[in-house]
Length: 117
Image (cartoon, rainbow, N blue to C red; front, side, top):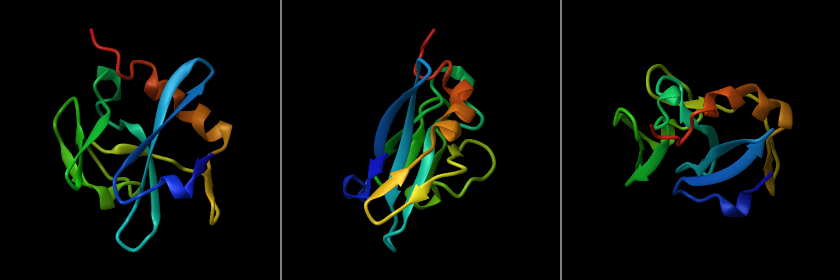
């Protein structure tokens, strides 16, 4: 559960652990006030250990390949170096609820997450 009051126009990174695997969800409020979410691991670079994002200005930057994209692209998906989309969640006025099954489905993409050789 992520409280909507904790989500701003800057990217917020919310940690969660699923069956012993550390994971993170990115959440941000876009310019129209819509909440966007994604997993903080890359579709392409996830296995590198550095396939995660940090915010730089109005962009998220992959720590493996350096690809940058705007915060407004979070949750839209795409090709190449982008965060994994959160496929199922419930949004209310006060919270974003991501079911355990949704988290468990992508847990393998976090196996090497932030683990550097």
